[in-house]
Amino acid sequence: MPDNPALFRVPARCPFCGVSGTIVAETTISGGELSLTWCCRTCQREWPIAAEEQELERRAGNPDTRTLPRRERRAHVLETKVVEHQRLQVRTDQLKMEHAALSRDLVPFSQPDHDRHNAHLAHHQRDLKRHKKRKA
Image 1 (cartoon, rainbow, N blue to C red):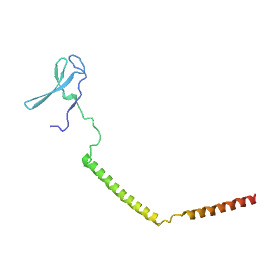
Image 2: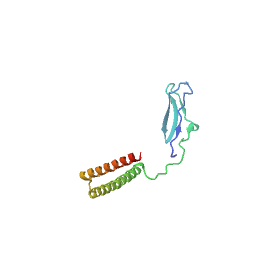
Image 3: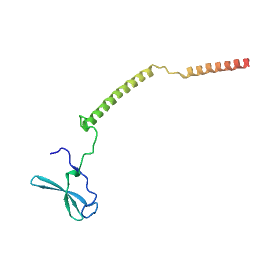
């Protein structure tokens, strides 16, 4: 018994009455034998399906060589993504802890220091303007 199904193209029109779109395939099993016939629904005539009418399978290319079923392949991809997510989460937690440690070590710039720095900067800017005026 063949592994591949038999494929046939349905005739466009009945060879007896000429009507199109009314042809159906019929199968009959009798005493262990299978017979295939075309039948026209319009004129009710039947004729055998010839072996020459059988079409070859049109699929081309290499057969599927994947060894795992789709469900297992998807599970593997999902597992890989979960592991990567967990790795990134651990790294994120490490970076947060490092940031917190660095933030504790930094001494905030107090307002009086800030004001003193701005006054010092303003003094240098005035000196620079005076120097430019003398040169001009």
